[in-house]
Image (tube, rainbow, N blue to C red; front, side):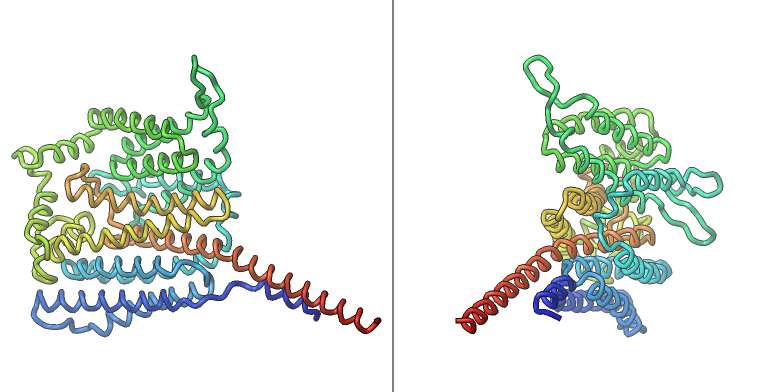
Length: 467
């Protein structure tokens, strides 16, 4: 084989990179999680957990398996996403095990399923840009999943919201997967229609404006979010879907007009929902006046959470020493309050800092994407995690009405955990794609230069011989 062919063959090989940084960060997350787990037991019962080695073995085996799969399937991808997700998951598990050991056992199983889902996603999705071909298929799938809980005999109503479906002993929220499909649909739509959405071509008086037909998707998204809220009686995911749409619309066009229009529609929709939808009316009332005798029967979950946060103060009561077990749904809706009590303001800031790092890394991956579609897809997936964390944290802290959305990676819930690890896998795939063209280009350029040098040397040698 000639030098040129050998260089070309090397240029097509995947870029191999050391993933020692990811492994080092994973080891740190194992140390922090296992230390927290041991301290929680010591604080609660005065001795180390009887099966600490089993906990460590499970944590290390599952996360190390994901690391090895990433090393094989996405070697050039980001090295911080998996450690951040693992640490958030570990801290959340410690609080779940602290207050409900039975749920902790199920959460361990869901962690294993999530690891498998990450590996399967990386194995099946070899190029995220190929998903652009299935724009309307993703929309149909997302709408079908959103409407699945309304099927008689299949949907389950929990806490007034009809978001679950039950299959035998297993229940899950199909909207957790639907939000991922909607992020891909929005990314595909905006990538294909950015010129129409961002270029003013119609004159109204002295002003050029975007054609009214370009605004139709905003109105459709607004109506769809309100429909989901009204039919399934859920405020959290309606806000999430609408905010996701507006975020991608603004990122793709850069026009502040859409932000203003979206804000106006949100205010109008909130007024309509507060007036005609009972759950929204109740949640807004609890947010404005949680301490009245009329509201306290419903707001005691939040009130107990605020008591726990107040007891935690700056440094926290210490792991295993809090009283958050009195909070209803402490391992799911209110796990942020439990963390705030036992780890204090410092612990809350650390958790929020981890989410900020995750979102920052996701946006960095989006900025380096190789196509508008992939860039918007990465932005949408990152926005889903960031908005979900913001909504639940702001609800617990009474910045926004409480929505009941699960805190990503930390709260109890299998469907949420699996969906979030799928998001991690997709972001890893995108970051691996971002690195491949540059690495391949460098190899190809090097091969081309070596080929030119070889040709030049051969010519010179031939000329010298002839002379």
